[in-house]
Image (cartoon, rainbow, N blue to C red; front, side):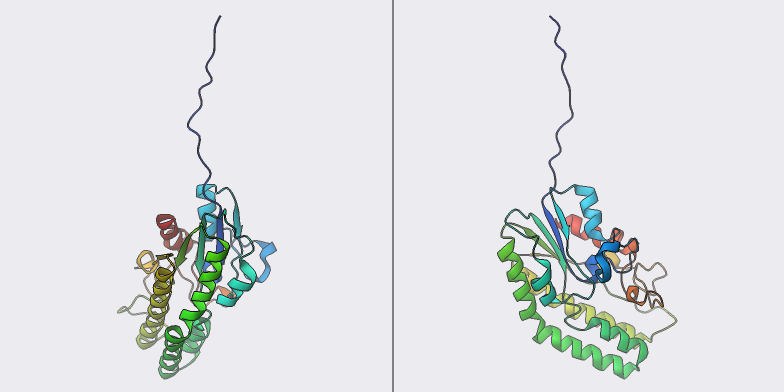
Length: 248
């Protein structure tokens, strides 16, 4: 009697159940290819959460990130998909709490002094008020997803410095990047205090900021204006995704 053997390749386990949380830097403002059902949250299929999902085939996937979200929005509106089976959570949050959008508007439309004063105000908020807000949100995430690895991604520098660039002054470029550093420093500190991983995207965006000649960020966009100063699809694929992938 002849027996035939059915040979199969090795089985590939599904990736961990993954939930993406956060603000416009997670949802994909500026990356195009938007999910029409996400409305004003502007979730993009080119954003890094979808790139990770497509590469790793998680056992489940939910993206509740939303443009304009602050820490309280995450806590109040985004945590429903989390549970004890969640294996991976990613989040960008804190920039809207510190008023980074208003910082950019002030620096684009105002004087150097206006920009410096507004950045100083944002830095004071980041140092004095943001830590407790991050703690509350991080605690809520851990309570609902006790077994998840949580990757907290920061924000890139907006500008390459010490190069000639039409538009904002060098003073404004430096203060805006200083604001990014101040917010990232607080986020990294609070993430570490909660046992979360901080993913520093300033490294991957280095040399690809505005004024670099090979930018992965939008400058001022007239229409739709909400894409302004957000990562492009390349910024998500080459700036954010590798950092999440390396830390997940």
